[in-house]
Image (tube, rainbow, N blue to C red):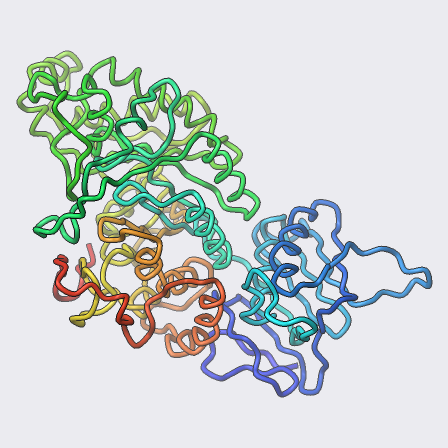
Length: 566
């Protein structure tokens, strides 16, 4: 048999036929010899699901069954003991939990996972091998053949945290759009969905004991169009929120796809929507918080939470409901934000200054750390782990707390060397709101140019990190902030195709960035663009934005030059 790594520059073949390019690239891949017949999926094909694999079998029928129009019935013992064409699903505890083995020959497809999650990832590879039409929701034509080339795939992920953050606060996305993104994450073997649920521009989760958070805090009267320096406004009121049943549905939908949902409730900054709903949460001795509304611009609002016992009790109540909606088995982590908290109001507030003195703190920075440590302890007492943006390092953390390193690598390095777990998501590398090209047609250009190749060469583990510290890198995450993404189509444009490159970085065992075969990846993307087309993704074409994807005359905030490595 010929062995070809999916990352190689040659077009791999099986039986003399070109075979699909797989994204992300599997760890080991061996195509069948010339002349070997493919496996043919048809009316007679059954699924043989071993105990513990029934959920994966259901998902396979719901996706591949829907796309092909085939029943993929449950296997039964034939009267004569023979076995027809089948897809066999099984578990093997000797494999790592997210590892899988996929073997295709003429008579059967055998997928084995170290757990149901590993098995599920194996079915995603099987789906890619079927061709792009396997990603549609209904068959294009009855009676067509579905051939899968003979192959053996041995695969497992590099990182256990392969995530994407979606900001639904700057621009709200309806529940169905969130569910769709979970499908897209699953198709790319990403397993963490960081759900950014509150910010200055909107509160997006129903909290029953504090109903004004969504009655008032979920809605703003207008929105800035483009960068915050733009003079253009969208005067349409904007907002929305997820009911608690919506959240339960999202969490369950993600779990079926082996995705963990990490909720983020950002404190003590990014709080203007909450203060607009409950003015007593703000620094009432400095500003007239009763006059505040949900913020209609971008950037960082100066209105932050007051350091009072009332504020602590309020957010404990919020988090009690959040913990019920996001059970520990879904994800032990709760993201508490902790970033970009302006200290001006605390400096002017007699109450805040009295609090600093009472607690024996040095300054306002330590006051922010006091906020975070309070909820670090509160969550730990309930069996959860706090994770926050890298600013939370500045006041010291409890042993189990983790850090999202967004300002660069430095925060993650410091956290890992101190023994804290880290998710690497440096804005200079994997903030997907940053523009994809330096050309004049790029819509609402924000930040540095981050091309598909730039993302493909991103390395989550910085050089020079000690071996012990490197073990604390849980993985990596691409962040999608939606100030200039007014709808699903704009999100698609910013996210894809770069999320495919990011998924390969998170999953595959790639060489050092300079040695990565981007040409080989780009060749495989030809097949992957066809999958994205079948999925209805409004990605940025390789040749640049289509006419209807451009936003001429809308002010952005491009940053020239290469991003710093910090």
